[in-house]
Image (cartoon, rainbow, N blue to C red):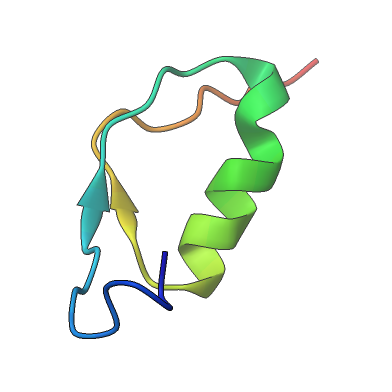
Length: 44
């Protein structure tokens, strides 16, 4: 996407809160992208 839209900056993204989405949330954190729906972390 960056090759086609090099001037476009993603600042926020809308996703579900599924646990299997963790790699996406880690990537967004690294790229300073704010998710609209945060990942639910369950503690035992």
